Amino acid sequence: MVGVIRGQGQASGGNRAIGLCADMDALPMEEGNAFAHRSQNPGRMHACGHDGHTAMLLGAAKYLSQTRKFAGTVHLIFQPAEEGLAGAKAMLDDGLFEKFPCDAVYGIHNSPDMP
Image 1 (cartoon, rainbow, N blue to C red):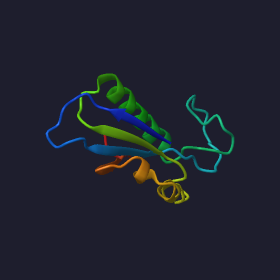
Image 2: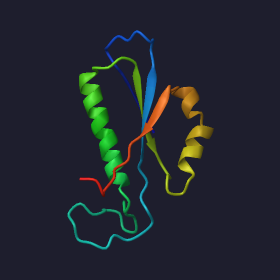
Image 3: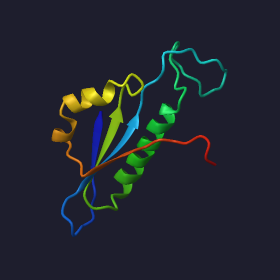
Image 4: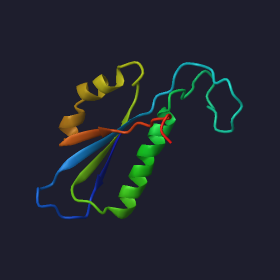
């Protein structure tokens, strides 16, 4: 799934585009806790932070779409099946960068060991 946000600023380098990418798949395992924010889908769990990655990309999407204080275009790339190593290939095979050309792509990833 890809979203597109166009900025309202002017740039001297032309109409450049970047991609912001986050994985969004869950793992096939039961969540072993009782947190209020636990998975609502039995047998599926975001054990390694993909829900956080998706939340960060959605936060960037909200901010960028509300402010548009940038020049060029941002492609928001929500990648499925990252853990199975098939999602990126499927998106590339489907023509991701032909449909949404990017000058650079940045992966959004958390680091739980950093404060």
